[in-house]
Image (cartoon, rainbow, N blue to C red; front, side):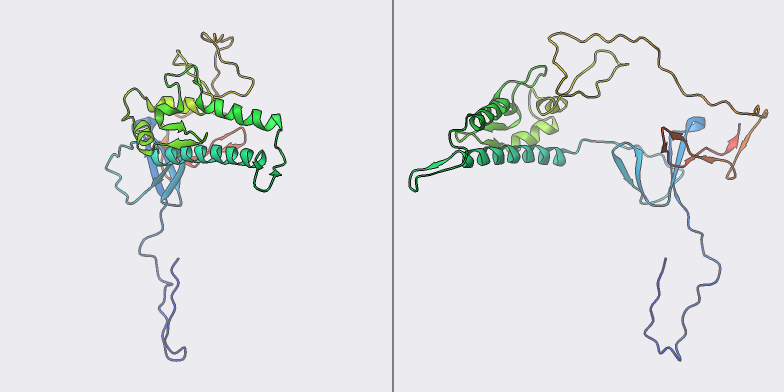
Length: 261
């Protein structure tokens, strides 16, 4: 939409007339994934494509239908490093709070409200143990291997250069994919058909391997048309778009490649 303002005299000035035919009608952005009969085209009203590929946002700068583009997805190192730094800052903040609530000031002879409270000291000691002990079930054993270590005051200090190299895969003996195991529950599968999704506080580690028994084969959704298809079906701009709803979630508009099938 274009808005025009004029400094001309309203009695003598002439406003431009935009009632004529458009030079070119507005078009939606269309992104095609794949090629041939299996290609999927998604249409958007914006040049920002969000949701077509999970956790990936595409910014479209120009249209060139005859050119294939390879999209390389790399880990967001800066966000990962910021998350680790936030973790260390939050940990140190908790330790500062506990010590402030259990402190005794000899100069003023004032005691903090939790001085002598065993629960507070137990929580502090447990937190210090968690960040310093060895994490089982992963090739990385300690936070210190990626640049996080406790100092003499019981605070986490970060070696930013070492952490950055670890996240980039430039640190000997450290695989970036193993770093997540230091901060949260994770698992791996020896079968390509089974993937670990998540767990809870009730999920117990296993000294060996968990055995997964498949009692029923996976089922695929099928749709049966009311009428049989013709010997050939023409797909063009009049019938090439559709949406799919699964469990109440509606997909983006999908576009079939034009042709006679």
